[in-house]
Length: 116
Image (cartoon, rainbow, N blue to C red; front, side, top):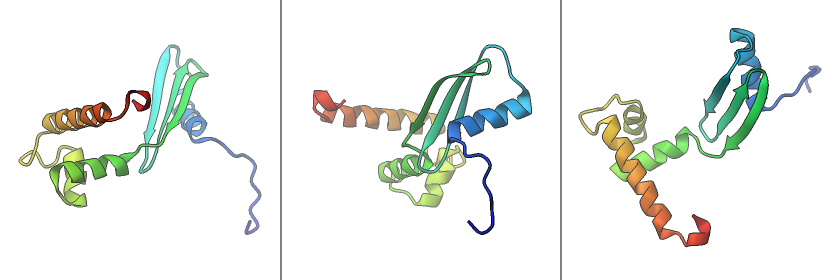
């Protein structure tokens, strides 16, 4: 490995927890740490210093952009702006969220009951 010697390997969700605790300390109560990447989302729900729930979800910003592009027939650049509400003359963030939610529900209704 190019002369490098590793000393630790960590999972994304635990890395996020370590960074959070290093910056903010261990807090009493609950916290949800969410890392939305291009192709996946990592979720770590903490209770104090303990991880109570951890999931890597195979959905990220690329999939959201593709849905916006297919729904509104726009470019990737426009999709990125719309996602952050920077193109309100085309559609408001609220209307976009509502339309995307309706589209997801329509797609779920098309699936057989065992696949929903």
